[in-house]
Amino acid sequence: MKQVLKSIILIFLVILISFSLALAHFLVLIPDTDNVEGSKKEVKIEAKFTHPMEGGPNMDFKILESGVFLRGEKIELNWKKELIPSMKGSSKKVSMYTTTLKITKPGIYKIYVDPEPYFEPSEEKYIKQITKVIIQALGLEEGWDEPIGLKAEIIPLIKPFAIWEGNTFKGQVLLDGKPAKNIEVEVEYLNTKNVKAPYEAFITQVVKTDENGYFEYTIPWAGWWGFSAIGEGGIIKGADGKEYPLELDAVIWVKAYPKPKEVK
Ligand SMILES: [Cu+2]
Image (tube, rainbow, N blue to C red; front, side):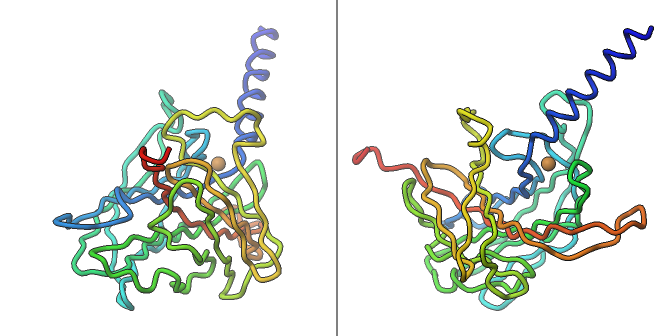
């Protein structure tokens, strides 16, 4: 009996360690396209809280506020909650959300999600990732470089919906509207191709912002890439009434398109 208990504890510890190794959480906000042309009238959008390079575990989260900014006008989004397994085959279910954005006129659609702070027990802190993705519709490209005015936001300095693999993504991190200097920006690939990292260190790549909050990263291959600037959001009161630090991150997702086969 004692032996059984010992092995149960051991298994539990292994699970605990492997979970805490899964370091970078990302709110993944992905539209079915970042360019709308022709007769397409709707864009489907998905929101998940996960570890994109590792393909999981997915984590439970709630959307506090969200919307789309289109030429100074705000469009509300109606999210449909779905339950998905935390890991493939796992019986633990967590939330993800889907919605449909109607394309009514040409312009830059800036989609954002502001989630409820998530408690990370392994780090004894809350994490809030304000996340955005920018799409272009029907040929009107003006305004992609203008901030929405979120509490934490990455402003792209490269047209975010026209990136080839091998292009350098450049952005500026704003926290409370001010450039965030010398902070880390975590970078992950949304791993739809089962890419294997040679070492753990490669799962989340990290670049740092300079004195003015600028950072850059050269995207090595095609797909969706997430950038999460790790900021500080002060202290908040937790569900247990105790005070915890809040990690306030600004996240942006961009898609890199594959090199045309003629030039590969
Ligand atoms: Cu996590």
